[in-house]
Length: 281
Image 1: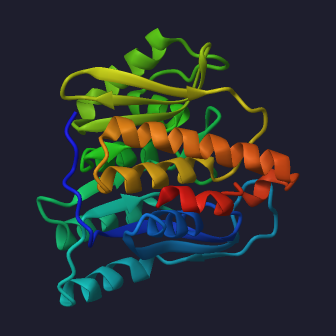
Image 2: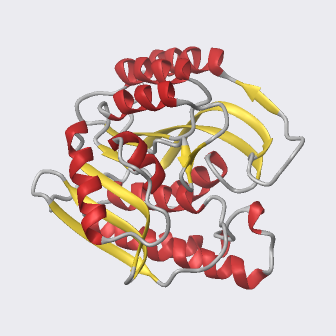
């Protein structure tokens, strides 16, 4: 499996929301990726006082109108980006604008890493519908790497969501269906099979599927997907194969989940990953 060339002056642009409390989206991506020596620039899609899981009364500021002006200003600065990393978009308009940002700022060597954030546990997030799923599917076709969870992958593949433990046959059917998107790699998170819980890495060029699993930990751990994706992207950009990057990211996220459980902190506040950042250097 091919490695990316390591560059000591790596620079990415992360297009996500900011949840000011709750350790997810940009408040995960920025510290995690920066800890690996990668300059992390951000385009926020929205600002929320907290994330929307288990919190009530949160504030929400839509930043749709700011995204393209930010990108145009960056263009005037003649900045090169080694990767774009996208996450939560608040609406279809933001998806369309992100495509414009790619056209404006990406070149043939820019990695497009897309987390199709829209659903979990078999259900779409609030304010998303089947039309949004269709537009996200089109957006994923612009990517080099996508990192959906099981629910998002099922929606993109138009396959029924499986409740409970999955089988390898199901995982492989799901990944092979998604191959039609034309991306180089699919990292499927939330894989829950009899031998463990973690992720499956699919190299679409050679058809190889690799599993990276740890024991399942009961509970809902907000920001785990953002942590895994951010670590994986950083490790891949800094010269690891996609398989090695996935293995490291799964193990790092598992350790952060264990540390969070041991801390006794309410899981809605996100993973206690800060003490582990030194392991990313």
